[in-house]
Length: 119
Image 1 (cartoon, one colour):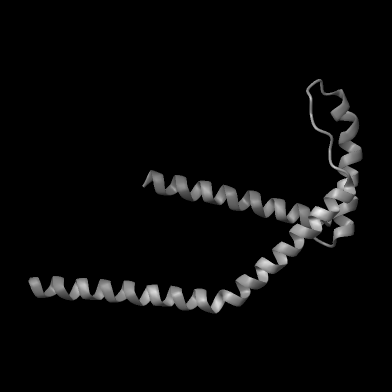
Image 2 (cartoon, rainbow, N blue to C red; image 1 turned 45 degrees about the vertical axis):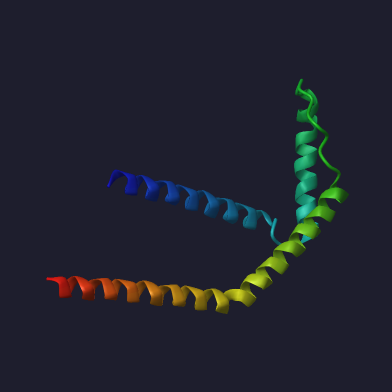
């Protein structure tokens, strides 16, 4: 019983954290367009650059905004394509899920009917 509540609490924590991250990034405007994302990256870069120079460890230099915006476009396009593929395959996923559900229910019903016959 405790394990079940522990799993639910852990799942709830992850959901709350991800919801918070999505809300804050949405409010900050990261998901609007690539230009806004690039502006945010520049703000973060200018904020962190002086502090990175103070760190005594060898840390690689942050990538330039043009490299990041190019990569952001590539990943954004991959996300759009993957989302479109998922939406296109939703009927197949639903069919497979329904098929598995039918098999499961028929197995449960056949187990119940054989259990009743044995008694």
